[in-house]
Amino acid sequence: MSNLLTIERAFLSLPQVKQGLKLAEFKTLQRNVENAQKKKFDSTLDLSKVVLASFEWFKSTEGQSLCNEEGISWTAEDFGNKVFGFQKSYFYKLTRAGKLATEVVEDFKRKCTELESEGETPNRSLEGLLKYAKELETATETSGQGEDGKEVVETQVETRTQVVFSLTYKIEDRNLSLKIDNEGRIKITGGTINHVNDAIEFLYDLVNSQSAQNNEL
Image: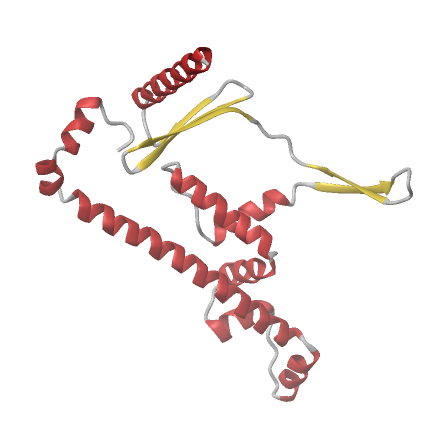
C-alpha cells in the first residue's frame, strides 16, 4: 500500500470502506503472521543450539566409544539424517547457526525489526542469519604493537555506501523512510514521493516556526 495516490489513501481511510474491506481484521491477522514468523525463528535458533550440542556429543570420545561398541559408523551427514531426519544442507545450517555468538544473532534480529519498522520485509530465517554472519566475517583484523607496547587491533571492513541523509515520518500505522547515500542514490520505503513532500513541508514549517520564535527572544 506504499504506492497509493492521495485520493486512494483518502478512500481507504473512510470508515465504511475500512469496514467493508475488513482492513482492521486484515491488519490484526497480518501482525499475527509476523509474530508467528518471529516465534518460529526464535524456536529454530533454540533448535540449532540443541542440534549442535547433540552433534558435539556424538563427536566426543564418549559418543564415539559407544558408537564403536554398538557397531555404529555414521558420517556427519548420516548423523543429521538418521537422528533428526534432516537433509545435509539444513543440518549444517543448524549447526553453523548454533555456533554463532549471541551478539551476532541479536544484532541480526534488531536489524530485521528496523527493516520492518520501515515497511520492508526482512529475511528472518536461517539463510538470512547465516548470510548476515558471513558478511561480518569479511572484516579482517591485523594486530601490531603500539608505542606503549600494548597490542593494537585494526579492523578493516568491506567498503560500503554510507547514508548521508535520512528522514523518518509517521504515516498512519507505518513509518515513511527516506535515505540518501554518499553516491546520491535515494531510497524510499513505507511511502511515495507525495509522502516525502508532505514530510518535507512539515519539517519546513516546523523549522521556520521555531526560527521565528527564537528571533523573538
